[in-house]
Amino acid sequence: MERVARITEIIAGSPVSFDEAIKAGFERANATLRGITGLRVIEQRVSVVDGKIAEYRVRMEVIFVLET
Image (cartoon, rainbow, N blue to C red):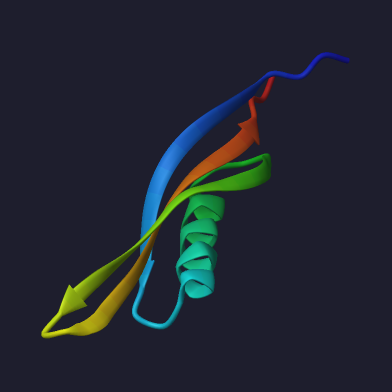
């Protein structure tokens, strides 16, 4: 059986850590998309306010299989 996948890109953030930003992005994507088979973190950034890290941000690709 052949499968076809699609990739969509999302950005997520967390004031706690990169791991928490990844989890937040995955949970939100999982609420909307069916058939997620993987994630790829493309980029990690931080937002700085007053000389302190305010938010951890990740840009990720969400890979999911298209339904037939």
